[in-house]
Length: 420
Image (cartoon, rainbow, N blue to C red; front, side):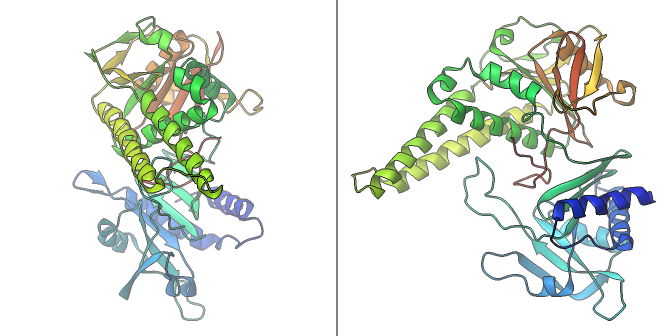
């Protein structure tokens, strides 16, 4: 089903990523894993695609994991054949974000038949910037393949994404647009005007980037298509072109003050810890940590509120201060007559034009909007695909980042990305 060149590319990416560590599994094994998981993802249960994650493990590796702090194992008394039917029966019992079905080759000599031996729990909740718990179970450094959306596969080496397959397209992970020159510059340019930035500097900016990343994850997890339009403050007051607001919010909370609260609290905690080390009198650090956890909870809830607004058909419009301006809005800017280019940064010599014909109205409307509104940034969430980022480079070019989620698996989302 999959072209042999795709399988070979996955193996090459594994070996390139693994360096001197464990080499990639054999070609037939990789092919069987990918094709079986892909076929499972084509099925639906209660109008939703069947979701599953599988991890290829050595028999000894599976049997001997599980000491304190390591992955939790669930072992089947009777091994199941690694088939579409078996996966469909077992998949509903396991959350694909936190648990992988463990697949091993038969124990008998020369038996390369794949079998489902059980499941391995490797939740990484606690590894995110705003998590209110401190826990992280590292996924095993094995080939892991996940299908959460119809026709889509994500391929990992442990926690690192090495490849994706979606809608007939095979892609390698690329730097997120937040770490690229252009989109990062637009966002930072808007944030620099915040009084919170002037008081806290780049620490505030780093929290801001992480919040946007968390917002995109929350939005993607809701499983519906949509768009988020980020506007600098000078455009948030109405000086923009091409928005037909449907549900305007006369008032809504800002996220920027919450991020500054966290900046201040964490700085105070660091200072208190240092004072204690120096033998000075310091406030109770446990109380300070509890206050920080409460602030993180409020930040997460703010992201969830914004993400939920994207469930209404149309675009969510937010200001640079992370305030919802309107939702369910229609993007109706004039046709952008410039070019739209896949872009990582301006020094990338592999830029090539985007064929908008192969995408839907949501993408083309977002291209038109950022083309006519320099400084605006758009994020387009596909119902069954990645999140596209858009920003205008100059009078002739809009840059297009096909995947705004990066290389690592973190809480709540298999394709969670980190910013550079």
